[in-house]
Image 1 (cartoon, rainbow, N blue to C red):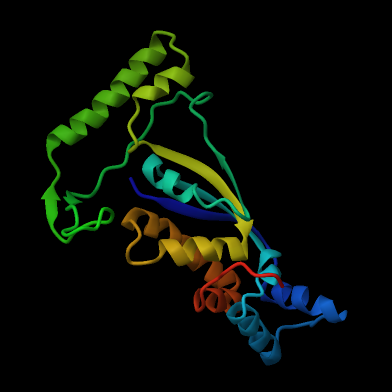
Image 2: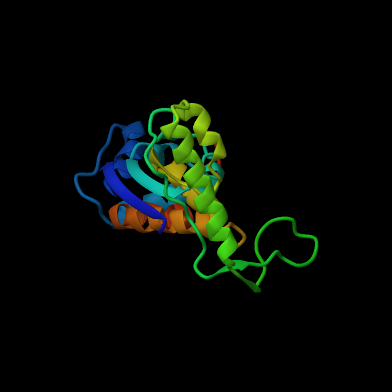
Length: 217
């Protein structure tokens, strides 16, 4: 099983950013030109974030619960609706690494991964499958799904709709594309970044080329 990110909808283009900025002077550009490109980079470099908040994107993401909980910490400018096992009681899928685990990092760093590979043992698969089997047994016996889900581990897949502004997603990707971010969350951020770079090429490059930060603009 893999982590997937699908762009479902979007609103706006690079020109949306330009015209959101130019409306201050009661002006608008009919088509993106070189001057507009320079303006987009100026806005990003100087922390004028509000023009980048007008374009929007909506994604469907499917990832293990432990990845979702990391990404769910990003709240500002984003909306999240997730599948609920209070209502859904079908057989869950679970995520497993391909062949081996990453080692714990050496030294005093408390998060992240090391360079060593630790073989994945059959017992790990058995533990996951036992959890699924117990969940299905509880459901079959009539246990409420909202309680039966308690036996499912963090490796279970979940899915959600994630909608937000271009600027909000740039903050997500600036943090989660960093080499120190967990690789599985990097996978989500990378797919989001690829999609947004296709639809907002000038703005996305400008935002990721500087540190997006809050400021009055």
